[in-house]
Image 1 (tube, helix red, strand yellow):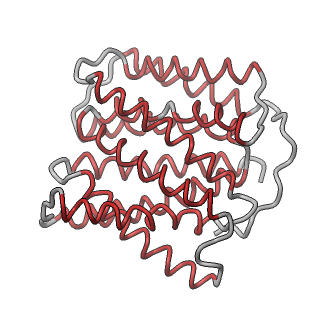
Image 2: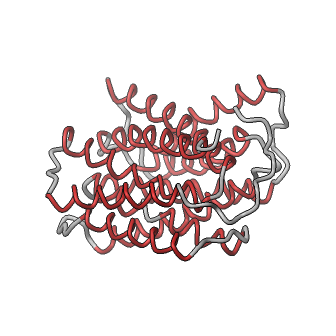
Length: 289
């Protein structure tokens, strides 16, 4: 399927939007505790799935799997902090500069080639994202910085995923996130702070874990299916999801400038997808879940 990677990245962004909604709703639960619950659920699903498939538990490309797990955990923790401390649309907008970092890093780590016109479209999409965000006094420079750092580290994580596309099954790649995050965040729950969830909060934590698992699998499959320069700009659709969720559930108003920004982002990513990728054909990956 020619656009399989794009379909996967759009599904991943949609399911991540559900996760972000849950995090925003659970504002009083410490961030490390949310990441811990999410990791426990994800780890349980991964272990069951790997045993069912009968594939090697620890995978083959250990170095990049560990990098993927550590950077993924760090980026997610920082991103969840921004979700809780600023409007959802603003936090998501800042995080979604990660595709730019991903492609920049891929030119060095993976020797991917990007046409000048693609850089122009990335820039146009980024301008659209800034227009969506607009001028928001509720966003402090401190959390703006945290968001940018999170996006950069996400770029490293996505490149690590692509490093493993020839060697490891997508579910193995996903496994390393919770395998690293569970003991670290669990220790933080014991030593730093613990807030006992009540009532519906348990359901939201369960949904958060399940939808994160789905989102990670689709993300991994997307990065295994195509080059980052072709698919990563479609992550910008997550900004649109965040705007809708913020408007209907958290009373975040949408200025007209945001709608213009949405149109710019969509136009840029669609034009980018129709450009012929200058890279050679991707090598076959391990079995896809």
